[in-house]
Amino acid sequence: MVTSEDDPLLINHILWTDECKFTNNGILNKQNNRYWSNKNPHWAVPTNFQTCWGTNVWVGLMGGKLLGPHFYDGTLTGRRYLDFLHDDLQLLLDDLPLDLRRNIYYQQDGAPAHNARIVQEFLRVRFGEKFIATHGPVEWPPRSPDLTPLDFFLWGHLKNVVYADPPINIQDLKNKITHACYLLNENQILAATNLECLRRFEACTLHDGGTFEQFIE
Image (tube, rainbow, N blue to C red; front, side):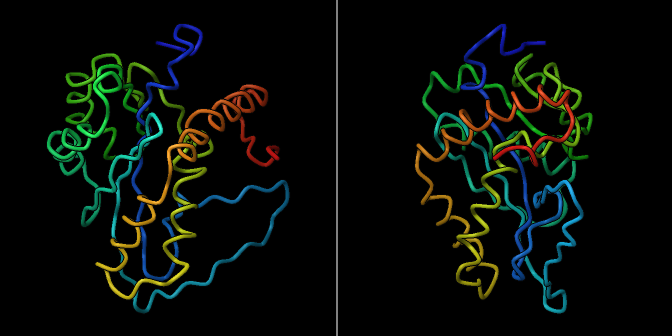
């Protein structure tokens, strides 16, 4: 397993990826919407499930750049995710400089579709030992939304922008997501993928791998 001690610049080579569902009622799926507190905050969010519609989106972050957004319909299955990796991801990677593409560590979390055997086999062929996953050569710790910049930064940021003016239909929602992604600049992305990630890695180590986000100021 490669660690930051083996390669101090490893964090610069990671392509952070994740999927999220956006709906018209302004609620992200619960896996991408976290609230940390030492005490029960009795936190509630109003929802409107009577007329709920939405879209699923994949985004990647690397080297100060945002890849995507890529939209897909329905539940993310192993086969659907494999098709994305095989076809769409290759096109998205063309937006990265060649030196970055040559040294990518592809990161994904422990979603069921990510752990499908056909997906794991493809990633081993495509990235060799350079992919970070639940069962990958570089193991991703399970249940770790506080370590990936898409969870602790991107999804919340996009939500604030997208829902400032509520979308009126699916296409409007996709347009707002795309525009919000376009507005992100290189410095914002680098701050999340480098500085903030390192700060969180250190906090995670300090707390023996337990939850730590409530201690970050």
